[in-house]
Image (cartoon, rainbow, N blue to C red; front, side):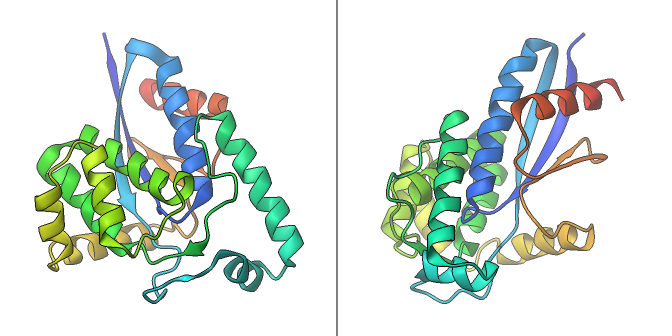
Length: 217
């Protein structure tokens, strides 16, 4: 009998460790095979909710955030790039240029699941992460975001209508509030069957173990 595990993947498009964590989770899902049916739902979290239009230079931002020098930031980013490559996520060799506000991306992810289903949402999540970390282009440019929608096989015109309105704003804010109040203050946070929390971009084998544990609870 096939068992089902529901996963809420709380994350942000602007989070490189979220891309690493997703790649590892995807490999873990493949590893457990057909005996466990995994349903992934992407939940919103903003690392930089106050970021203005235009964003901020990524090195400047990380120096301010972590209190380390530019050299250390670049070394850290290179380590993350290598980790991403190990789980099948190719980051741009020169890295992302700026940090952006991602609220509109979360509105589109909410729309994708609501109107197109969880698999469509998963495709869009992958494409948005790829837009930011692989293509390293401007997330404030609607054309770049809509290109990701199109690559995910979703309706570009419908997505454009979402971007040009305030649709799903309240719904996304409510989901963000829910997870913050539940104690999620860093991402990725992977919640299995509403009970088991795996925090951070863990190795594939740890995600495999968590999925199997959740399937047997």
